[in-house]
Amino acid sequence: INAEYMGLESGSDPSENRCDNNCAIARTTMMMRRNPPFVHPSIQVVHIPGKGRAVVATEALPAGTVVQRVPPFALQACEGFIRSRCDNCLNKIEDAPQHACRSCQHASYCCAECATESLPLHALECAAIQSLVSAIPGDPDMLSTARLALRVLVTPQLPSHDLSRSGGTGAPGRNPLTDTSLRAVEELIANSSQLPEFSQGYSRKILAHLRRCATLPQSDEYILEFLAKLYCNGFGVWSAAGECYGYGLYTLSSYYNHNCAPNCARFQAPHGWLDFHLLEPVEAGAELCISYLDLTLSRAARQTHLQTDYLFICTCARCERDLPIAPRYICPLNHIRAGTLVPLNAERTEARCNLCLSEFGLPAAADALPVLLRSGPSEQLSRSKMTL
Image (cartoon, rainbow, N blue to C red; front, side):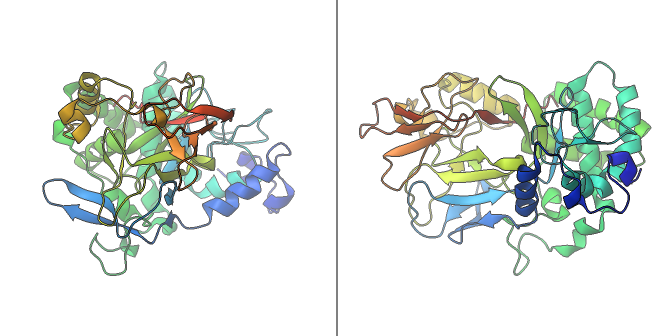
């Protein structure tokens, strides 16, 4: 595989070979992806006895504060969208892609910049993708999961992802909230022994396909453990119409624990990044928690979902007392799942839905309904729908 196969002119300047429909987006994409992750100076990762790792505030912070912006460790367009979504940043490709891999025909790009940036990694996976496409016909979910796993498992062959760059979690000078090296993948929690038998069997099938289609140095045990990590730390990127058009592995967001009455929510930022915003003011020492599921679900539904998909039983105050969620925090528009309204100011008078991005006026009373101010574009990020 080489530049010509990606639709690039050999030796050309990528800035002179942009997709006309997305050149402005492409410039923004490249600027953002080359910047380091953002983390607010007043949050840190700590170990809570009996609970494990957690994100906490080191000083009081107002509602609406952006506490973190994180990139995906790995990102890809899923089956059914390989010609309409960029395999590097998930930007929408409006017309026939001008930059695509002619070998595997499973990687299209919105612009020359994305094709150029992806070339070293895609060169490592291209031949294996061709084999996987033939080996897994008629099962797009399994094929997408296998492709994302392959993308991460070949990453150690890239010099830019040298595991030795970082020390352990307690290494001096290392902030786990900004570490994008392979060390962050190594430190993800797997809980592989707690996975349902169906999920374990599904992982074994993916392992068998990867062994037949790719040459990977990792042991079977390592790959199975990694697939378990992908189960709990992968996200599907969804449209408002309920279509999953991309998958991503997010290592930096794995430190946020769940709460059914969260004080923090995530937004889908451009090109696969995630933003984390405070829903309410927090005091120094407070843990920052997000919700892994739809906040409008009943207590029984939440507990079943969390135990099945995330392998734990929630003991938050809302579950213990079976409390309802305040309407002022829930987007009143009709979504595939309920959106969370995130304050736009410290006074919490206006908020934006983290799914449809519509903006609302927030009532003073917690049980009153929000008032729509401005409708927004709607693409949503849901917790992983990969059927491991």
